[in-house]
Image: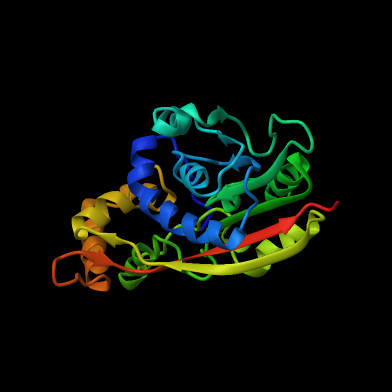
Length: 263
């Protein structure tokens, strides 16, 4: 099956879809990244600003710019309380509108696999990072079947429906990410998995937030017949038994990577 298309053009829907996951993964990632205080940051593919906010709260940056190609995402981020401290701009990760050697840290959260030209995207991140600066990011482990939408994929296969292929799946493994970064000439490349376990209020909360039309899987589910969607919902419900209070808890894994720009 061909790659599905990601169109993250609804800030509110994206926040419901990925906000809790972004914050949980992002906190663990920043602790591992151990960036310097007072750094100039660029958040590539900032979306609704969830990761940007974590950077601002925990890393004491001297400045931070967040860029995203979807104006709807940037409009959402500009309404956040942090917008007075962050510059949010509409920009393409493959053509970053910044001079060479402009930032101490260039990071990308849950985005790299969605770039249509990943080597070029990493090269752009390296270009705008200062010598000795950090280039880093993390993506869901789509290759290992450990993404946040894993229960939906398992539910589809359990009833004989082949799920769509998520863009960049082949480049979401630790080995593939390391190869991408090394091929761009980055040094001191390190990578690790980050596993997190958020909780949903109940199954309806999970289903509503994880099946929006902005996501590749959500778009695919929307194309199914009503009967197929009902079968899928029941299948996923069986895969995700609820806790005693009705809440839903499950784990997912993101692969994180960091490297240095040569001096």
